[in-house]
Image (cartoon, rainbow, N blue to C red):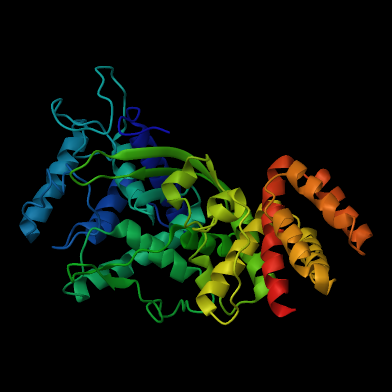
Length: 441
């Protein structure tokens, strides 16, 4: 992971590559022949900067000098564009006219390492870096660049609508293109609500911040990726993750693999076992334990990054959860925990095995009225096990007094041959199943 001082020109190269991938796809789709410069002036600048409210904030850029907008009048905007075009044509490249380039003022804050080596950049790359920078997808305050041309084209579809929102909504804050892209993709890939003939129908991306100002609302990072996974269930890609700071240094996390099939698998499991009624609410809970930044530290985004918040005690301390089927919110949380465990185990057969074993333990604890307290304590002691050896050792006590010996032996064998890393997840799943069967018996 790279923080603050990125390698020179890395952001420029990545943004330019994204811009080129998009422009090539755009020209092919619309049978056009835009150069990077022509598209920048005709489409990008016109949408993003040729209005009093901008769609994007790039600190120290030609359009946002320092930390202020400067002259945003019609003539002022045209003057900024002219200065940018002239500086690029004269090969005077710096942070003002190339996204991700090092700062020209050696005493100023920079997100790129300055060098006296001649590192060539072409004129079209400067414009492409601007175009590519508009495709960031906001995830927990960080931006994700996705090297998939169809997703880029889908993002572009929403830019014009964002401009309409800014122009028509007086109190709407500008400069939130990445947050907009997240909202737009989530809406664009929702088969139930998206209408290509009228994209604004059933689309409500707005929220109100603590100062009472209208803003583009934030979407849970996992929910955005779930949206991508629904549209592209077999797609795995390497993304670039970064944050453009405002009055703070820029931050780069780097290249992160995103495994959409694994994310889709998790939500599919929820739908299979608990239906679709509360699926969207459950999606808000996945990924809340770590947050996107810590999830990126794993190097890839898969099932393990989706851990729900408040789950640790059920793994580390062997806590038996409480199940309250009459409380909707608690039930959704409870079910989300179970699905994440099953997804981590990556073996649906363990769902029924955990349920059957939990049922046997419940029957054992109630099999003898005179010994019910003792047997219940034995079961609770067994369920508090957090590793393989501890569990099998405690299981022996129950086997000696249980009529379902064959089934207990089978579960002991399953755990014995299970990969060590999977055992805590399976033991936790058994505890959840026990909480359920104890309630409904």
